[in-house]
Length: 557
Image 1 (cartoon, rainbow, N blue to C red):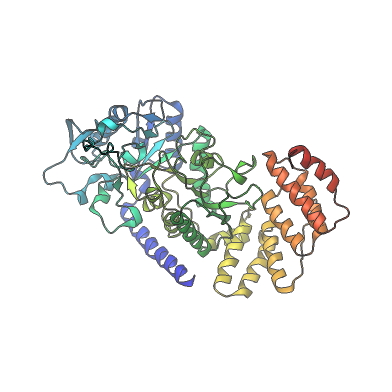
Image 2 (tube, rainbow, N blue to C red):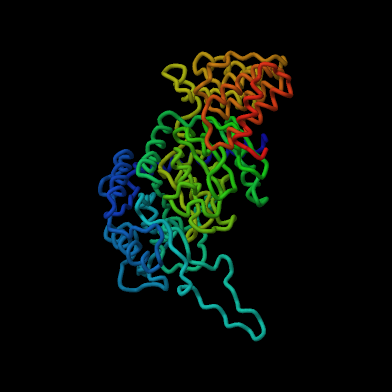
């Protein structure tokens, strides 16, 4: 673990230094963000103007023209109604190299004609355009068109007809194709390696390819919240816990998520891990999920279905699934569902990417930890362009712009929020990792004064119990009505396991006074409550009433 932490902090230092140099060279990154909106969609234009105003992006950096209303385009429609008008505008503004004539490639895209002395390393696109930001209303994906693929070889006598390889397709996200808009002549078939992936050594293609982000969501309000969350988190700092859901269908993905866990623990975040093949349950702990990395179900589920669930401002999340962003209007697909619940930065796939060509969550986590912006981190974690991935969020957002020390200082001198307790927990975790338990205890005890909270008291109670085997708890039943049910369930289980069964049963009763959605969550809590009361012989427990309700909810049990 120490070697891994040293590597992370080394990366942090090197990238942070590079970021400072880059900032001084660029002077004003916002002036190099260009925002694309559908002129025939009032919400799209409103979102673009909202983002530009809040981020100080010059008004002249808006590029708006009429676009198809559908999320999914044919290649012909993409080439004619999106790619061509955007390329014309980029050429008119001198943002890309070359001139436009009438030449088109096999996909129907207009081709830039480059100067004879052109060198990719000196391309204007990467120097003039830091990010291309697509706003809600810009089409999302391009469907496969077999007529634009190379012909299959003829079948040999007696042999089965040849089939295309899995990666031999031209379906793609609009975002990923627009990343190549200044790089003419690239094949439409399959994926194109991303020169930003893992920050590969000074590839000359970095100045030719573009980083593309998307502000999108089920509603306009969801998309605007991406902007607000980024700015609020940069002001206050990213605070909360981390959640890692590892048990998926392939070892490679599980390995990525295990590495992401090491990164977030190395940053000091309190972390919950689900290692089974199941999704993190609706009865799992889920308070303040500032960071979430998991997989692998098609539709959003588990504790995310709690109607009161919200990510804290600035939260970054990845749920790996082949079709996580098949539509940004879907209420069940992971990417739009995460945005609807308040996530600030996430990624997704519009079609099957195959695991190796999807965003790598551990690289995303490492890049954020090193101080990169969310847009740069997404590019760092993305193996390929001209493929299925999208990044959703403000590319300028830097989750760790405000340091942990600054968060603690604000809590001590200003008006701390309920989230500040997690900043103190993070500081204590870092002290323990450094083998300084006395300092960790000091941090936690001071937090009681500056940023009291249930999560903090639970951590203190567990810590003290490990030393004295005594359970001390300041909150009594009746005082936790508004707390996160997942956190309370974890506390209740701990209490029941270590000798406070009667209190645990009272807490179960309070939890069952709430409305749980969906009903199977309530059934699970009832089952736990009954088992706890019977195991520990708590005479005051309303077991009969609970059993009757459970029977109504689950008549087959």
